[in-house]
Structures are given as structure tokens and as C-alpha cells.
Image 1 (tube, rainbow, N blue to C red):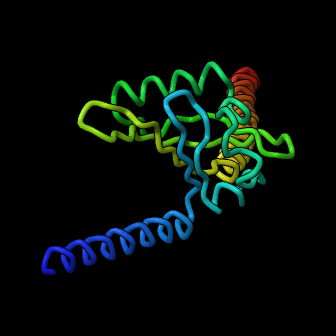
Image 2: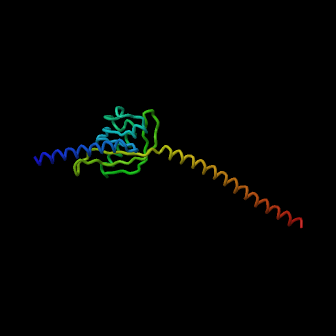
Image 3: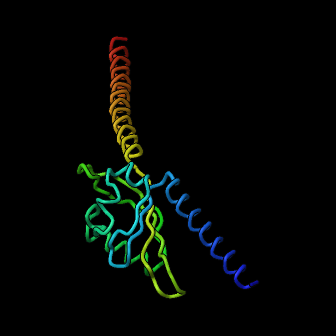
Length: 173
């Protein structure tokens, strides 16, 4: 009887932990997805859907190359499985409507046993706003550089004219 009670308690604990993991996966505001070692998508969270427009039925069971550059993402998976993780790797994901979204990828190798890889967890940050601000700042800096050149050029011209005026005054005197 005592063993039955322990087993029942362990099963309840496992179910609670499983529910906790599902809730956390769904709640997390960062897009998350999991692929097997061959690059087939096994699971996505709601944040992934929100950013890319893909829902579970669009991507689960599909190759990750459906929304990433095939060569690049294959290399990322291989590197992640070799090194166990990749942090802050810039890439591009293609949304359901074809928009190329700049992202920063984070990937972790998922191991069932000490040495056996079960696939890769991915998360990413949407960099659209960051890239937009970078572009705006670059444009402002270019404008400021043009203005600086204009002002410096004007100042140099003023110095040159003052020198000419001095020389003319010396000749008249």
C-alpha cells in the first residue's frame, strides 16, 4: 500500500510539472519552438504565432527551412548540437505573409541522456524596431555629417576671406 501511495504521488507530481511546463511555454512572451535533430518543427508557442503569423498547423511537422534560409539554419542546428548552445545570432525569419523579419536567435541543445541529442530549442527576439531605429540614427548621423562639412567648409572659407582682407589692408597701408 505504501508503494502504491508513493507511485500515485509521483504520478501527480509529474502531471503537475508537465502542466507547469506547458503553461510556462504558452505564457512566455518570447517566441519559442522546438525542432528534432533533422530540423522538423515539433512545437511552437503562442508568441511564435504572434510574430510570424504561423499557427501550429502551419509549421508543426514541417522543416524549419520553411521559414529560414535552409543552409544557414542547418548550420545553426549543427553548431548548436555540437556546442550545446548559440546566443544572439542575427538571422532572418520569413513570416507567413512573406515578410522578412530580422531576429536574434538563441538555441539550446536538448539532450535526453548525457550524450544523446533530442533536438534543439529555439528562441528569438524580433529586431524590426531595433533595425528601424538603427536606420533612423544612421540617416541622422549622415545629415549631421553633411551639416558639419558645410559648417566647417563655411568656417574655412571665412578664415580664408579674413586672410585676404588682412592682405588687402596691408597693401593699402
